[in-house]
Length: 149
Image (cartoon, rainbow, N blue to C red):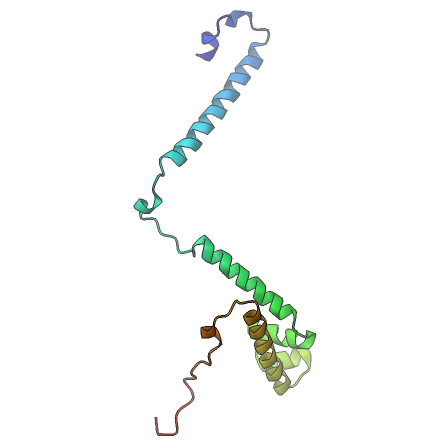
């Protein structure tokens, strides 16, 4: 149709090139139409009742910022403390496994883990990433009062 719509289509020097140019232009126009239709018809997403199990983007950004700050806090730990802390808290190795890998005693492992927790908490508080609720001692369900509970 486009070839016939040209006023003097019979005097074209390269009909093959003309057909390829027309085909290319049609493909571009079609792609543009599809793209604009996709955005034009989606005026209100909330009416679609589409739910995502992912956190909203602002929460994802906040979580990433907190994670990066936690990593920075761990990077600031002394080398042996950092290794013990990461093996215990990130890789979930038992004290016996850490002792075997690093050649340190169980009490040394406990001390380094505690030191790592305190230093990471202090760093995150300093950066304003922990609120007062995060630093309150948690009740331990294993502890019982002396009144026969």
